[in-house]
Length: 172
Image 1 (cartoon, rainbow, N blue to C red):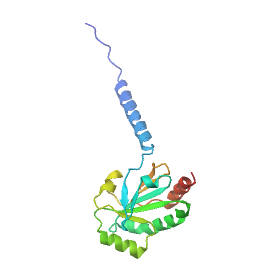
Image 2 (image 1 turned 30 degrees about the vertical axis):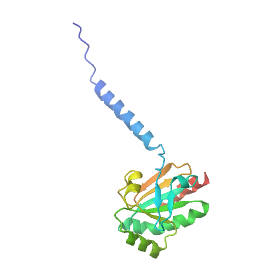
Image 3 (image 1 turned 45 degrees about the vertical axis):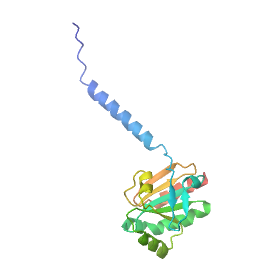
Image 4 (image 1 turned 135 degrees about the vertical axis):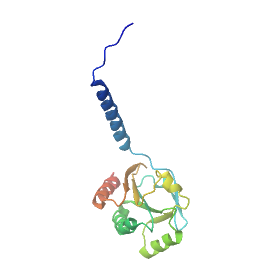
């Protein structure tokens, strides 16, 4: 009967460290790979439909929000300014009201604030589900011309950084 020599005490911690490092690198790499935006159709409050497929070749912002969300209401004027600043360069913007937001509140908010971009209702919650189960508002996605998600913001974005990202994406 042969016995194996005892392993040095440092082998187990080194193996654990190597596994943790490999997982961290893999996780970092996967987080930095641009995922394709889901193929969905938004139904605007005006009844018009717009699909993510029809927006290919354009830079798009999709903002999940609610009239009951204080941060959403606070950031909306800056979202309007952002849209107005970049729409001439081809920016598309869809503001998606969450499933729990009463449609009459959304219609009233949109009309009284004169929102200049498309506003859609997520009546069944399918849009939020398709975009990775969005539950926090506001959540904003910037989608590049190739249909890949460039950035996901949870909470109010840092607008100078958002503007820099949009300028770069629209120029490309």
